[in-house]
Image 1 (cartoon, helix red, strand yellow):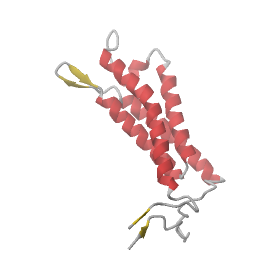
Image 2 (image 1 turned 45 degrees about the vertical axis):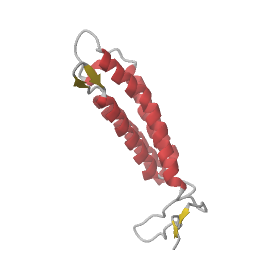
Image 3 (image 1 turned 30 degrees about the vertical axis):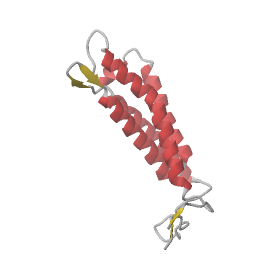
Image 4 (image 1 turned 180 degrees about the vertical axis):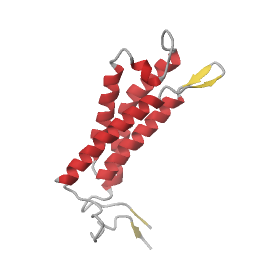
Length: 165
C-alpha cells in the first residue's frame, strides 16, 4: 500500500496554525519572526564565541573541539529559527546576524578576553579554533539554510513529495 508523504496542509483549528503559509509570515507575525531571528543570531554569536576556545589536549595534540561544538550549536540555532518561522529568509537573517556580530567582535584588540585566554599571546590552538569558528560560521549558516529549505520544501502548497511503495 503506497504511503503519501505529502498529505497537504493541516486544517486550521482553534489553537493551531496551518502547516505552511506560502506567503510567509505577515503583520505582527513577521515582526516576531524577525525579532526571533535577531535574538537567535545574537545567542549563537555569544554562546559560540564563549565555547569555541575550548581545546582538548591529547598528548602534544590540541584538538579544537570547542570550535566544532560552537558550529553545531550555531547551525542548530539558525536551523531552529528558520523552521520556527517557516522561512529560509529568517534562517539567513539569523546566521547573518551571528556572523556580523562575530566579525565585529573579531575586529577588537581585546577579543581574547571574551574567551578567557590569558598570557602574552595566543597559542596556535586558540588561533586555529578562532579561525574555525569565524569562517566555519558562514558554512554553518549555509547548512542551516539548506536544511530549512529541504525541510520546508515538502510543506509547499501544491508541491509533490516522493511516495514510497
